[in-house]
Amino acid sequence: MRKLALIFIIAGLVLLGVGGYQYFKIQAAEKQAATEAKEFLKQPSDQKSAEDSWKYSSDTFFPETGLEVGFLRIPTLDAELPIVEGTDPDDLEKGVGHYKGSAYPLQNDQIVLSGHRDTVFRSLGEVKIGDTFVIELPYGEYTYEMVDSKIVDADDTTIIKSTAPREELVITTCYPFSYVGNAPDRYIIYAKPVY
Image 1 (cartoon, rainbow, N blue to C red):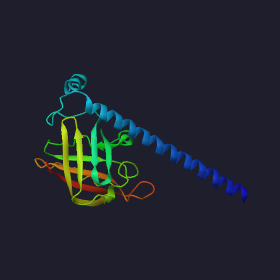
Image 2 (image 1 turned 90 degrees about the horizontal axis):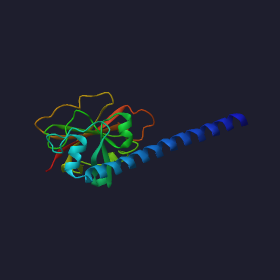
Image 3 (image 1 turned 180 degrees about the vertical axis):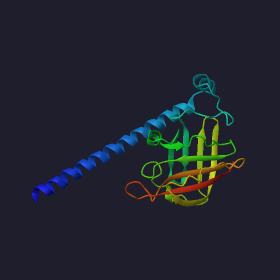
């Protein structure tokens, strides 16, 4: 019986250690992404164009996957989260992922941002209709007001669709927020531009 208890204690300590390591690894990646996004936003426009071979305007803003491009601010939560181009696991470890192929502000279509419920969007359930989101990019800051939310199956991809010429911000994360393991649903927020 003592051996079994000792095995459980050791297993618990190992699991705590692995979980702690993953948590601090993600926190470090998010902090690094925020630093890189701030540096990216500070660069003069001519340096950005020469370095990355693309202009910074709404018409030509199509960043490379993995690039930290700006910030998502959620005033209600006092959150400033780095936006990374892409939604692969490596991208989402750094912050909020921009779904490649969806639009950016002023591109008159659906903007899709995703993040983990247990890191960047830990408190997203506290945001209510009427609250705002601010997207900061090299070509400006854009504000959106939450107008609706819903819960869908984790495999439901019908929420990602063109809304052209109407602009819409869609924010997604896994749901329920306190679920342990792979969550069965997705929490979706819809917001409209207020600029």
